[in-house]
Length: 185
Image 1 (cartoon, helix red, strand yellow):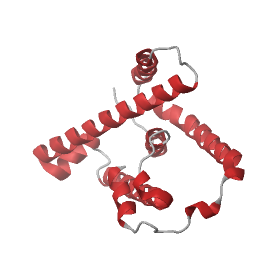
Image 2 (tube, rainbow, N blue to C red; image 1 turned 135 degrees about the vertical axis):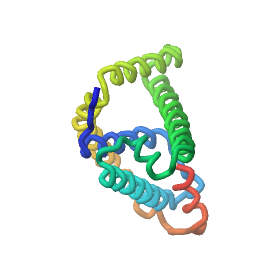
Image 3 (cartoon, rainbow, N blue to C red; image 1 turned 60 degrees about the horizontal axis):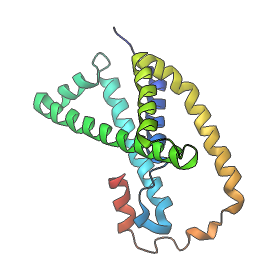
Image 4 (cartoon, one colour; image 1 turned 180 degrees about the horizontal axis):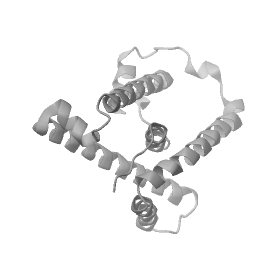
């Protein structure tokens, strides 16, 4: 079975992955008032990584991700890199799953065991995997738009409570706490 994602779908899946992993997991609190700078730096770093990935795919259009890694890093290097990426993905997905389940538990289903909520969320994920990456890619085209609209509406609804002076003074703690955040995210 030879299924391909369009470049748009792959990009939107990465966007959804980033939104999903950062929505409830607040990182970079050590940057304090300068967390917004750390977030911008992290987004720039993520964009650079995506550009590198897109460039690799355009240089080797006939190879999949694993073959491209092997081409550039060799057999041993690619296995190490793929192992690290797999570990990172599983670790981050488990953290996101737990955080979303805890959020649902806290907000709506306080009498439901956390394990059941997590199991149901994993069943939804398994069903989407069963239908294939192309289905998930098509879903991402619709869902990303809806999620971004939801985020914009959410920010608009709380914007009257925002005080722009809360981010001042800039670099109050220095640059070190800010630079640590994108590496940890």
